[in-house]
Amino acid sequence: MAENKAILSKKIFIRGEIQARTGLHIGGSSLGMSIGGADSVVIRDPISNEPYIPGSSLKGKMRSLLEKLEGQFYIKNGDYLPSKDVNHRIGKVFGVSADKETESTPTRLIVRDAHLSNADALADAENTDMPFTEIKTEVTIDRLTSKANPRQIERVPAGALFEMEMVVNVYEEDDEEELLNTVFDALKLVQDDYLGGNGTRGYGKVCFTVRQLTYKDRKAYLENGTEKEMDFEVPAELKGE
Image 1 (cartoon, helix red, strand yellow):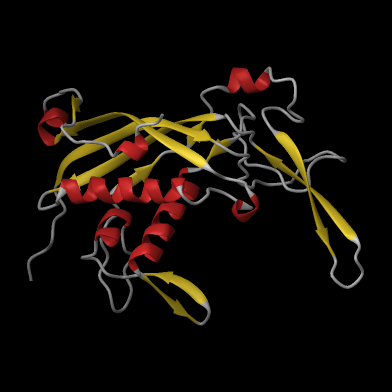
Image 2: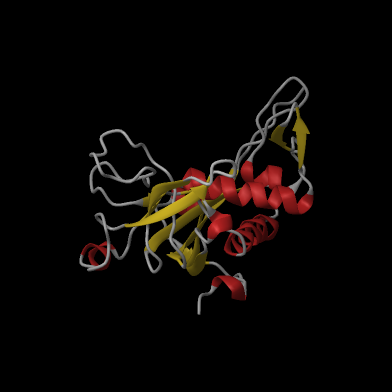
């Protein structure tokens, strides 16, 4: 039997910005927090101490919402599991891991960690409670005792800007228009949903702005070429205001 080879045709680069429209909470480790700190903290870069959006969090949310939209998931023993359909556009873009019943297909989408692009503005803000972030107190009420249980949640304030970069690997035989439309459909879904925790209580509304769409094909890599502009119309919903 002939071996299947995934031959790279080009890499497409999606660059732009993510704006937090409401407070954003993507949880990190509470280890090392001082007494009196937040009960639930955000993830931070260990070098700069700046909060960031992990690529894994954004990519996972994109995939999950697309799977729910198109019914590409199943429930087993109470667990939500992604579809194993390697021919569906979601499987092509996000990849499928191999098991006894399914062959694998490589992920075509790389989502970079998104770091703050307006860190100086947040650092100088007068009303932040911790470096670059705010503290919001959430109160739950015990239905039996009526006792209030306050918790302090750290979140990145509305208006924070993050650098966005994604890479789409296009292989021979791929439909690059289908791949790009799948990525953009997923981003539009996240815009209309939420990112991070506590989204049903107002957290995590974000806006994506695609500012640059370029590519490097195989020839450019082999002959030391440069990126070129993509001839592709970005959806109006992802062009910002």
